[in-house]
Amino acid sequence: MNVNYKLTGSELVSHLKDTRKRTLELIDDLSDEQFTVHLLEIVNPFLWEIGHVAFFYDAFALCQLDKTEPIIENADELYDSFQVMHDDRWSLKLPNREETLDYMEKVQNRLIERLESHEPDARETYLYLLSIIHEDMHCEAFTYMRQTLEYSRPRLSLENNGKNVSFNAGPLPGDVEIPGEMFRLGATPDAGFVFDNEKWGHMVEVPSFKIARGQVTNGEFAEFVDAGGYEEDGYWSYSGRVWLSNSEAKHPVYWQREGNQWLVRYFDTYYPIKEYAPIIHVNWYEAEAYSNWANRRLPTEAEWELAASAEPLESGLGIKENNRIYPWKGAVSSEFANIDFTSMGSVDVGAYPLGESAFGCRQMIGNVWEWTSSAFYPYPGYIVDHPYKEYSAPWFGYRKVLRGGSWATSSRLIRNSYRNFFLPDRRDIFAGFRTCAK
Image (cartoon, helix red, strand yellow):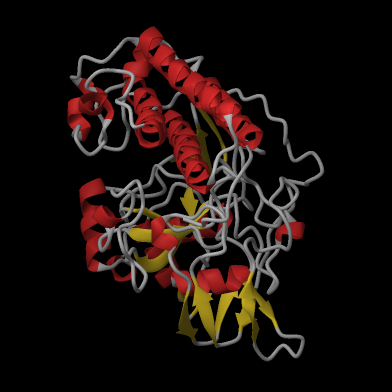
């Protein structure tokens, strides 16, 4: 926690209201039947998940700051994700929909009342932001849950609609060369809000490499599929072949062949794939296999962060030591990145030229999460000092790192140093990839 990083009470209230508005818009149109959903390994019942969001604020903000118990008796037995096993969430005697929404409102009202009584210090700021960003993460999860379950497209009242950006901007071929250098990987203590797994920035040596300016497109991935990429064992690792055999996958999960063209399901409707939009909803094994087929490779997370955040020396023979927070200079906005639900979907890889990194890589923030080759491990000197002790530590070693965020990622969350992490078989998340030259 940065002891000097504080937001005002009014700023935090604004963030609280903003993420809650998004949550409610993502669930309000769902029927009670849709709220319960059928048992699937990759989703939660909506009813449980919104209660969990409220409980997180209750447990990690109110209870921590006011030394109180949760508003609902035995709330941890209902909503603590580390006490309540996934499959048990369908059989719990949960409060009904109206009662759960009332719980959300009561917790938020208490949080706002606290902020109206005094100005928060750094610890309060951190706990509030932890809870707010946790809800932002669930907003993205609610969105890909709707996609998974073939629910209708969510209808959101978007203030930042990217009206000054051309989404149909075409391809972005070619690589950029990044010079080899000692590079600081990770967040620095003077950063604002960061998670434990970003701590702390440390020097790593990265040999020179070439990385694609843009993400792999639907059109490019279709060539791999049409060439029999899912049938050729040689492109797949051993673990990938096991997944391929068990899943019986023949193409990306939401693709469907119709005549001589590929269609993709977007929520509950099929459309022709957008040739120059990035491939999305592919897992790590699929990204690895495509890269092998194309005689390319996935970047390491250090390479990815270097390409996103470093600035070249004026001589072009090295990099400056300082790292950018975002690929571009300045604050985050919808002019630079496809985030915050701006486009309600992925856009052409050639869009958002203002968001290029100093080396010329585009959309390293937003559009789709990008798989890297790196397994999720702690940085040197990692200690469990985070209020949410289970955020990172239980997952080290067998998940893969993703970088950059998607169109449904909150700008409050994302930055160059942010590390996402999922099992390599997950296809439901808004993930694609870019490649490096071998």
